[in-house]
Structures are given as structure tokens and as C-alpha cells.
Image (spheres, rainbow, N blue to C red):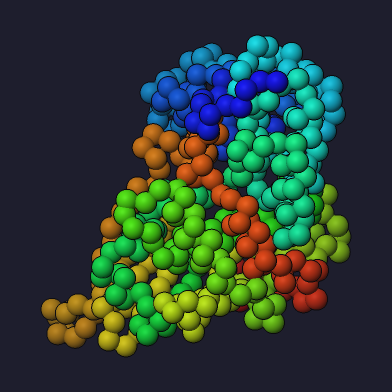
Length: 439
């Protein structure tokens, strides 16, 4: 048996399931590029999947656009040549695949397995890791969604930790590695905002995450996962709500303190009432490959949250997100009322991270009052790294600051669980419709 590895000892190889899909092309491979360019990779990377690419170097090359290469200061060919990337073809649930991975890695001490796979496979993957010839120190990093509801998440965690020590298990929600999301904690520490953002001064809170892109090529995944609620709301958006509305721990805070604050906030959110929610599906979704002609899988949701906390109690909180909707900002908007210090406070995550405050000011022409917006840009990345580069870097180092926890996962499932049943009323909408025009 290999001795247990200290928590922050660095991994010496990275095994990645999911490199050949959209997530690999859009996020994981660019993340590896940024890690390499900043000197934070330095280990062999082995992609694994049922169908090997014809050319692994071309797979990497295709994921490096000129803008990404320019950020690194290296040419695309330099990056392709320097990154130690190979591929093992096989099924994640079969022992032979893990034998092949072991043979490819050779004499490594602390491999890191990053599994961007459907939740139904994660328990099998953990058992294969434990049964394989990989060192006992092997670190297992699992993408969202973790489980399919509250009960299955708990069962999955129990199944995994029966074979993998919890200290070696890491749960990913890359929104927690977005600087603009993490910045919400620090913004809330402002004495002025602390005074304004309280129930007596608040008319409403809105969290909107519009996604203009559709689901071409992802129909099978989306049908399998159950649509917009498990794919985006249960993880990314609930974590954003928790980051924005949790009571900030004292500064400077660490990952454990921030995580505890998020868990406390999540436990105060009531399960979503389906009667105060709207689920929708864009026209044309059912025409996609691997989507049933009569699919009731939702691609849009508008839901109201209730939080049992003095600061937010009684404030209408509306969450909206959808695929193939009109382009717009991913933002949290606190709308103020009465004699508050401002008309609204808006924390924008994308496309440009910023804090915006609407204020009344004098119009010198009419001597009346007009609304002006004070805007402060904020950082949207970790220096040279983006969110996925940060997550992959943390996976290698064993850092949990940007990872989620079982408590957060379970509470998030509890909150959204009433929306997981097949909808009895699915609102159709045309592609390009603004979120608030749907519901």
C-alpha cells in the first residue's frame, strides 16, 4: 500500500475523461494551455474516452484559437509541441481501460483523475480507480452534476467514499473559480452596500443568466441530465446566489469560511415552489439529434426563491436562465426602493465583470433628476488563468478553495428538487426571445 499523500502534495500526472467533447474543446484544453504557459502544468496529460481522436495533436491545435495563443505569448505550434498530451481509448467503467492508463502513466506517485462524465458513471469510475493498479494516493476530481437529486447524491458519495478516502475526492463547480463570482463576497463587505442591501430597502433581487447558444450536438447529454435545472440551476446558479447573498465571513477569509457561509445561506432557502415557477423549451429543440420528438425536457426556467434570513426575508428573488434566448448580461440585480442610497446595485459577471450602481443626479439642462450609472470594472480572471485553468491547477495541487462540497451539493438539490419532475406545462418560446419576455 502506498502511504497516504499529504493534502497539498502536487500531482505528477493528469488523467482527463471528457477531452474530446464540447467541454474539452471549449474549456479543458484551453485551461491546460494556460496552465502550461504559466509554468503550472509540468505533468503528462492523458485523455481517455471510448473513441480516440484521429490526431491528438490536432485535437489540441483546434482548441487553441489565435486570441488564446496571444495570451500565452507562444505560437499555437509551440504550445502543441510543448504540452505532453496523449490518449488512451477505452470505457471508463472497464478494468482494461485502467490497466492501459496505468501502463501509459508508468511509475507515477500521485496521479490526478479528472472525470467530466455523466453522474451515472461516477460511482463506477471511483470503483475502477480503487481497484486499479494506480497508487492509493490517486486524487479523484468529479465534474457536476453530482447525482441526479438529493438522495442519489448522498448515495453516490457513500458509494465513492467506501472505496476512495474523502480527502482524495474533489467536487467541481467551475463558477466558484470565476473571479467575478468570488468577488461578490468582497463586494458585500462594503459598509455602504451592507447598509443598502437589506429587506427594508429592497424592492426585488433578480439573477439572470441568458445563454444565446443552443444545444446542437449536445442533445443526448441534455436529455440524459434532465435539462436546464440539473445542468445549470442546481450548481452554477445556486452557487452564484449563495456567493451573492451569504453573509460574508470576516476579511481576510479562507475557502472553508466562505464555504460555511454558503452552506448556511443555502439551508435557509426553501424548496422552489413549482406553482411560482415557469419551465419552457425553445422551438426547434425537439428537432435536434438524440432528442425525442415529444421531449418535455426544459431549456428555460424562471423560479422564485424564498430565503429565511433577516436581511432577505420577504424580498422577491427571481432567478431566470435559458438556452437559445436573447443575448444579455449574466448579472445579479438588487433593485432598491424608497429613500435608499441608490436605485439599484448590479453585479455583472459576464460579458464584462463590473459593479454598477444607479444613482439620481441633476440634469443641468432641465434641472430635473436623471438616472446615472456609476460603473466599476472588476477582474474576471485569476491573473493569467481563467476559471477552468484554475480548477485544473487546484486539482493538481489538492487545493479546495475553488471546489464545492457535499453539503452544498445536497442543499442545492433539495432547493431545486420540486422542479425535477416532468413538467405538466412547458412554455414554448422562439429562439432569441429575451428571458423576461418568456416569464
